[in-house]
Length: 212
Ligand code: C5P
Image 1 (cartoon, helix red, strand yellow):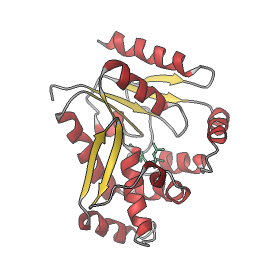
Image 2: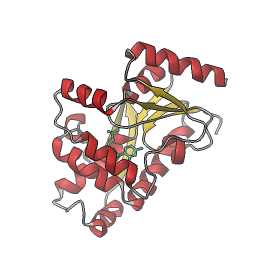
Image 3: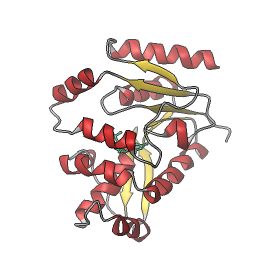
């Protein structure tokens, strides 16, 4: 592709979404939140009363639904057939509790990775997730891994008032067989534990600019 992709990966509450959003705004790139896609599949699984552990039923659902992915007003929007679940619905506790199970299914990943790559045919992008540098865009030179101590990430979640089993999700995301959360080869690693978000953004920008 003639377009560039910046891959931003990291665990939940590392600050990666904020970094991705700021880079996209400041550099005029499209920001794509790949987690919203895994959340949308999970939301539909739950809405239909399918048990997230019933892998065969989840896989069957993939071809039953017309899944659309687009970015509108800077927001990643998923279309589940004719329905567009809202961000609030995608961030619901039930979705938080089941998304890592759904994201561990290779067939789910295959479908969504293909859709994620299609965004690069339309323009420059910043994509955030868990496997963007390792699997989705392994050839991009622009890879960032944002991390933070468990303690800091727990505090950030508590401050947001979110009731989310972050640690459990991170554990499942890191230990699954299909595209586990890993630092991509050549990625710039930024620990945001002791930094203000402006400092994190500035550091990431410096590192990316040096890459050319
Ligand atoms: O980024 P977010 O926390 O919204 O992602 C929700 C979940 O989606 C993650 O915990 C992970 O299980 C899954 N995910 C993934 N690969 C990505 C993005 C998200 O497996 N690239």
